Figure 1 (cartoon, rainbow, N blue to C red):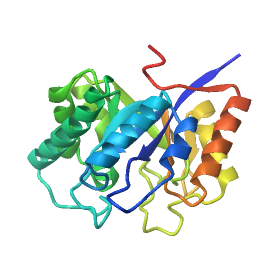
Figure 2 (figure 1 turned 60 degrees about the vertical axis):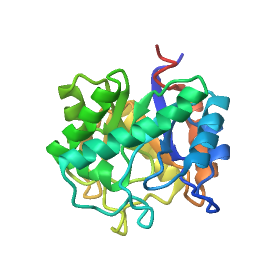
Figure 3 (figure 1 turned 30 degrees about the vertical axis):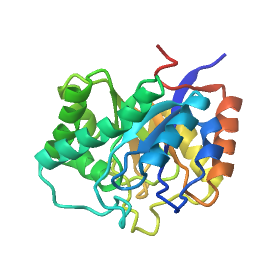
Figure 4 (figure 1 turned 90 degrees about the vertical axis):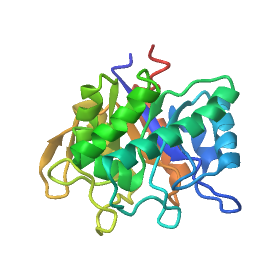
Length: 257
């Protein structure tokens, strides 16, 4: 009997032109939702179209993954922006991906900001509200994926959006529930077994151990795995197999309806 259900998501479609990033086609069979880059931090029209088609082929729900217009920094560098600029860049990128999804006769499930935009809107209420407002104005039925317990989740609820608290398999946490910055030596969990243990703890116990040893309560409905890591495919296979072994069902939110 299945006691738990979790959505497993990954950031994909992050290649650009002749540059191949990630293991999209290999990862897709093991996830339930995909966050597809929208052309600003990564991706291009051809990659967006191809990735949408691949996701639909594998019955994976599609989400827009808008980020800062900073391909050189892969959208991970903080940029000084106004809430109005965040609203505009978010709205623009959702619309771009929606065009390809509509052309394939399908629908978007969610929006998840990328990189620095994600982390900044997790802490800054005004930026979080700008993201939520863009989603609300575009389509209030879209889900907002945001860091569990963050300003982004609070902003989504303020606008009446259905929010999805996101947790991470291979990232460590700070005492306040934020992700450890990537420039920190212990930001990433390199050991597969340790990462899987963290996922099971999140799903079963709704908590995680921060790098200072403290315990954080996390009410997450989706877990992010990264498709561009060196062992990404092996990790995706192992986490999928472990979740099934533990009677944890992997489902997106369209399947739950």
